[in-house]
Length: 219
Image (cartoon, rainbow, N blue to C red):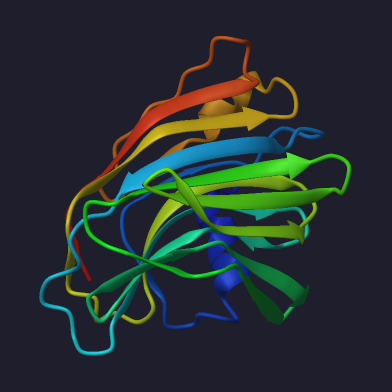
């Protein structure tokens, strides 16, 4: 079964041909008939990258690949030294095209805490993204995306000029499924030195990841 990493690669192929990726945690797909109901993760923003070229664009995010080919991915973005945070969906419109749907953008700084919450809303069939900056809601977005089947983190450079990205951690990470999937743990994949573990206390419906440690990485 493909990891979220593979799903993301396919989803982004047409839109971000030159994008480069660093260390990552990924899971999925979920078992047949099971989807991701909600998730939460918090990032303390690190310093911007060192040694990056002018015009670099670095993104740190956690996201979900969906049955419709969409990518739900609230983003912390560092462009030319400045951090911004916002909700974001890359929506598949055909086999070769995507539409960007973006929530309000808020400025941020190293040391700020960014929490990304994704929630399936049964009454609408949409996923709602809520982005908190130091505990305050700064960006929301609701999109119709099918059902989320994989979840993971990314260190993404829009090109390959982002220099060295400091080590950082996603904390208080929890993924809640629509039903128990005891085998979901077997889909976990760690790349380029990322460290994490998963556990469940309810038979596989609620997965506690806790902390995802992402090492320093040079593009």
